[in-house]
Length: 238
Image 1 (cartoon, rainbow, N blue to C red):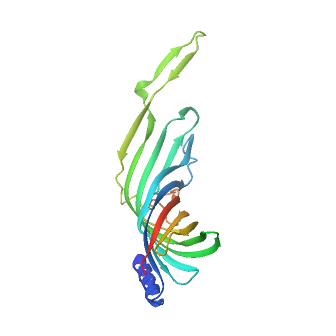
Image 2 (cartoon, rainbow, N blue to C red):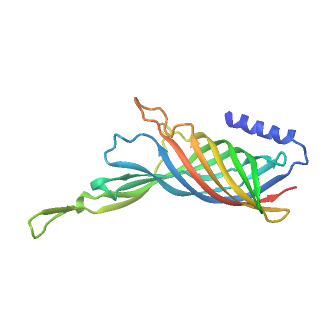
Image 3 (tube, helix red, strand yellow):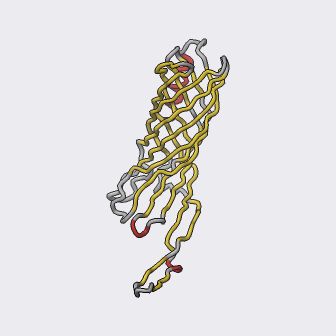
């Protein structure tokens, strides 16, 4: 319902603006780096780290005036992260590969021009839907544990790690597939000619909704944070 209302307002903005306003359509791709904002103090010798993924989008931009545009970039973004073991368990980790369909709606404000570059800032909100997930990593294999004695009679224990790569089935009773959040970013663009514009942008996506539903007592909140560095090209439709 909220998504429908948001799209309706966006369409009203488009139709209420002067017809001479310039529209652009393009293609964008880049790297994403996800992180899970939560408390894992209950997990001994563990830390959450960023993990790279990808993003791809079809941006549409509607220019309201010389300095301000409205933009939406429907596409796919990965929100990946890893939980790595430390201390004596260093080398063991689990990476969570989470793929979302994403629909952001942003304002784009021109900040200033320098030589042939134009610098801009983005701010807005997004809706995401969790469409696929998998888990991969390394874990200790207890069946490979061995012991050996050195010349001093000291015993050394060793254990090998086994790799795994498996699909994760999203559980509608536990996992929250819908995600809402805010966006902020900045970038630079260069006009190639009257029709084409190339750009690069860095954006931060912060979730306002938890990754999991409230399905148990004293549940620890979990929120996605995603950094995205993308390049793209826009084609004027005017």
